[in-house]
Image (cartoon, rainbow, N blue to C red; front, side, top):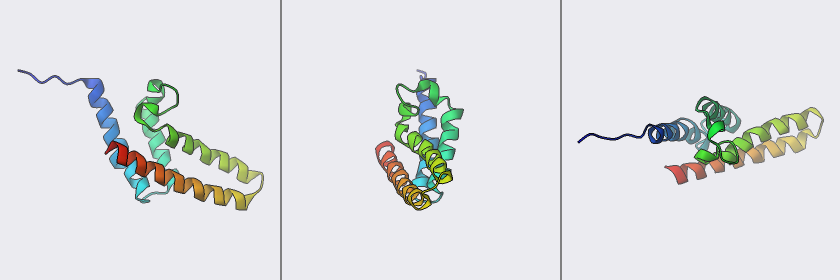
Length: 112
């Protein structure tokens, strides 16, 4: 009797382990700044070709779509800071950081 391994399932599991243990755990525990951590998550999304496996939103194959969206929200805040409203942007960035940490914790709870 041999062991049958489905490569696609194994790759999916490896991606989950990498995302969980290397990236989102560090964001959830605030070991890294949320934006920096999301940059690393996006590197995994790109390297693993998750864009191609998305159903509706990038990262939804792994439940990451809201975190991917948050990554782009940081760019929007950068754009806003260039045109003014610095105090508003700083507050919004702190709220986004807190939201990213909360979402990382929720992802960890749901995928641990």
